[in-house]
Length: 154
Image (tube, rainbow, N blue to C red; front, side):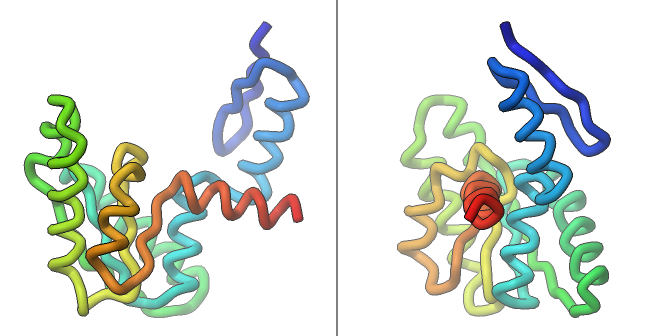
């Protein structure tokens, strides 16, 4: 039977109640995946590129980046890039085109950024292709969340 627990900042669903409780502790103590990526980006530098396949993702992530930087008392410059056609390519089953379009858009941000954030979970698959194209770190929220969880458990 699946157990779910609702916290103030999220919900955790797992096959066992202890797993759900552990997940809520991670959310409470470490934040969510997007917060992990934002923290990692701010650790790298103040000039952050945000790449998204949906234009609606840019304002929210930009706002969260600025708020996190303000909490740290550090300046931040956010450079957004929306990737037209990438999500449509992925939905049509053309992952190669999806990844290529994201890499091209990310490449256009360099050298004006210190780090690139791939804004949506669906873009995480493109990270390796993007990293080959750009000389700055490329972050995804799933990888940042795993890195934060490993650090918390170490």
